[in-house]
Image 1 (cartoon, rainbow, N blue to C red):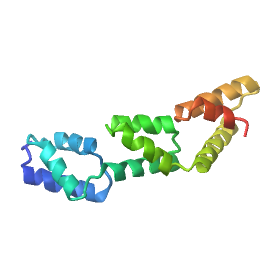
Image 2 (cartoon, rainbow, N blue to C red):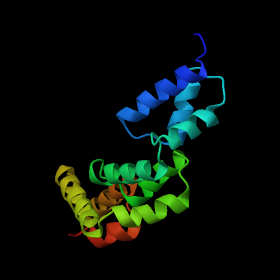
Image 3 (cartoon, helix red, strand yellow):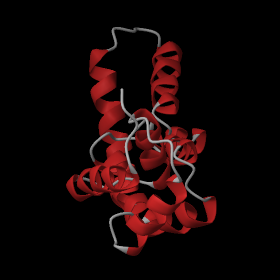
Image 4 (cartoon, helix red, strand yellow):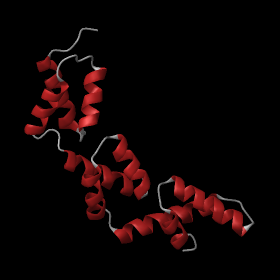
Amino acid sequence: MKPLSASEAMAKAANLCSRSEHCIADIQEKLYQWGFEGDAESIIGALQKQGFINEERYTRAYINDKYRFAKWGRIKIEQGLRQKRIPSQLYHHLMEEVIDTDEYRQILRDLLKQKRKTLKESDEYMLRTKLSRFALQRGFTYEEVLCNIDA
């Protein structure tokens, strides 16, 4: 595979960013996958100047999508953002801003209600244990689960 030139890599990355939100880590990974051997930082800097990459906009969209559509809890969302190398000071205040507390609690209650219907457990203790484990795997905190498990 022939390595990409800087202009080809820039055009390809701009095209990718114009179709959907991407963070710096995503673009760095793509440049590596495409075989670009040049200065990735200059391409990323140019994409940021032109508005193709915006970490705050990406983080806001990521948080919104993961809690509303994937029905993830705060812990799992934070883990995903750490994997994307988003600075914690950026996502902590955005999590408070984007996540509606009432809607978040309702999502957890609905998840627990749906999961309860699928479990064939007669022992109440085992049922609560399985529900708790399920919600914890989805990224909800133990306190949130305890408050909503009987709702």
